[in-house]
Image 1 (cartoon, protein in one colour):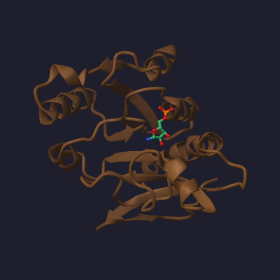
Image 2: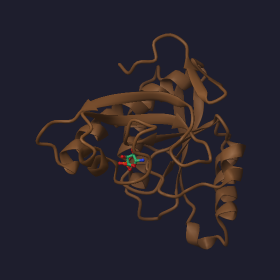
Image 3: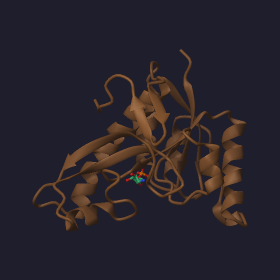
Length: 208
Ligand code: GRF
């Protein structure tokens, strides 16, 4: 079986990276992680990759004069290992228009809200403040406008009356860990086609 060659971009904890690593550990999973890039040397996620023998690379953003130069170094790192798809997993920097264009429809992100609601940061507190009854997470192809782009999959989490931002975040994070590998599988199996700003899913696109 040919496995899709995947690069992952992180900045921190890396729990979504862990979910992807765990999925890729199954011999019949149609993707493999060929490189993890972090912009921070202290990202906990780096140890998760190293623990299972996956290559890592730190590209410190402060070493570059511009966002474009940093992004170009990241692209070079992924191209050197022939990555075919890039997954952003808690990568906490905006990327340049050039980077988005270069990886168009080959770059996905996970966002902790049901897009297009609650783009940006602090999504769980804002969902509670808005009285949302359902919240969740979204995997989407990346476009230049932050937290926008064709939606590959979403998982819904019911908001409970006594939720705090932390309890809600914890349940959404569990949903993220199921959703991200599911969406990666859909793409790796060739079941996702982007037409305009819509991602069409062949077969059942709902999370397991
Ligand atoms: C997740 O909530 C993800 O949705 C958001 O950043 C967080 C990263 O967490 N983009 P982790 O580093 O994967 O644990």
